[in-house]
Image (cartoon, rainbow, N blue to C red; front, side, top):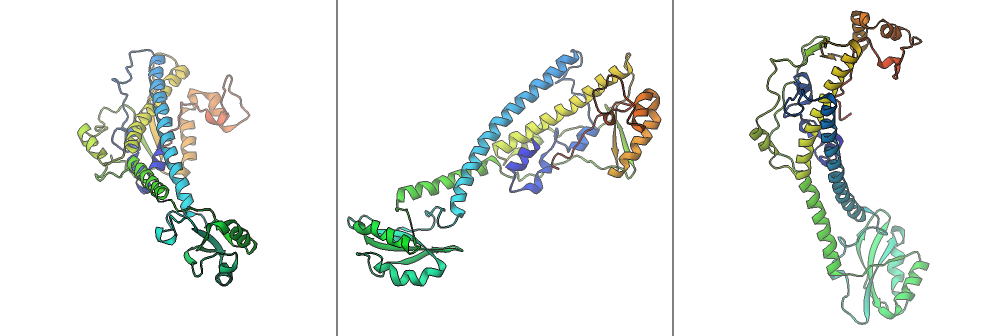
Length: 357
């Protein structure tokens, strides 16, 4: 979901992070003030029911994401293909944005105007020889109408009946006749198609002119922040609905959908983390339920190793075998399907909020 927001906001990547919110606040604030949503995921139903509700919700979001991004990718690729035609060299690029009606002799039964690509070093040769490459070439009819790094695009007018002979002689002299016939309707259609695609793509994302309010995510200047989950004193997690709706004004439908459903998916993900903490704690420590879930955020990455050592020392009594395996990788934990490095004497799950890295 986050990557899709990045792709849609390709022209404003510096503003991506402020659009990745959960329930109207930044991700760190949401996680550190997390409370279980009793209305959406009732705790009175069996755990398998809660998990099934989460699975169905995320599956629907994923299906919608695939269909919406597929439509957007089709639009983007069509636009890129048209843009490529406008950025290649004179041999491959479209000429509809280069030529003008005045460059051609049109509606003539006998005359035709050809476009010839001439290497830069051969300009003088072209000027001296084009009139004599075949019979019936109109004198002084050549004009340079475009250039790139390799050569120039010249017009030349001649009689239709000598066109094939002229092409053959031009090729022998390393001049390339570009197959192009001026069709005003086709050129207009191609230009309108480019305009339409550009407009359609822009409409999928349009920057909101209302500033996005973000919740505070400041941390005290100490090594580790500890926040008990389900803190009853937490501030309100989201903004009023009307306030959030006003912030969506001016946005394209795809970006608006991504923002709403990114929030829904992220909230569901954190509920899954909480669900796993509960299940794993019961499996580890049995009933009645007796555990405390907390969030630990090392102030620096370099503090992680020291934090592990402290936690292992404090909680080693909960699982002596796991604690020993941390110190000695050769110690095996019976029945463990994970690498020893992922198992600790306490229940641990990682939450990575660096979704854009």
